[in-house]
Image (cartoon, rainbow, N blue to C red; front, side, top):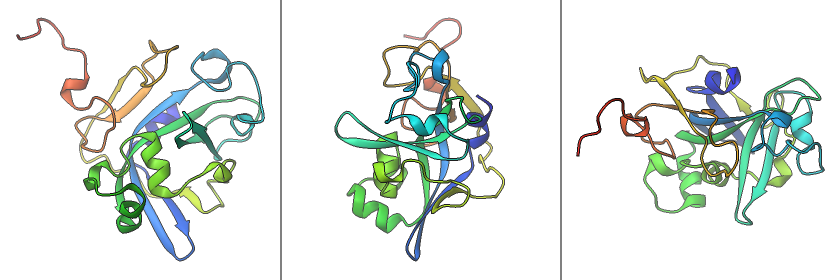
Length: 194
């Protein structure tokens, strides 16, 4: 859980030849391996999820629903399968290339959703296992910038089990967040106005 919160506001960078693509991480979800029924590692190691069981700091990239790829950062020591799904980023560099991959959408929606993140960055299953310390995909060594936004948390999105765990974290009110965002995303307290 700690890494998920720490990633918010950090910058993810991808080098493609001479060009750099970058975005600020604004939404993530944490997955806790064998103790988390929503994790790909819940039932143990398979060829698909083996990277999750490796050392921290590697990319776990998988193909889902037969339509898109998703990027996770492996978060625990070798043998313990924990990862953080990058759900949404605020585009910072390489927007013209992202637009070429994503089409005509507003800039804040270019990397809004885990499939959009991978598509905008050009990530595929071949990127699974990439060393995010010494590879062409990394988290920049600069301080997190959250723009004064607080970290909000709530249930994860797009899963059927383990939904009660509040392991989705996002920068409240950020326009690039993929799911419910801002004040409206949080459960109301007291009486709900009609």
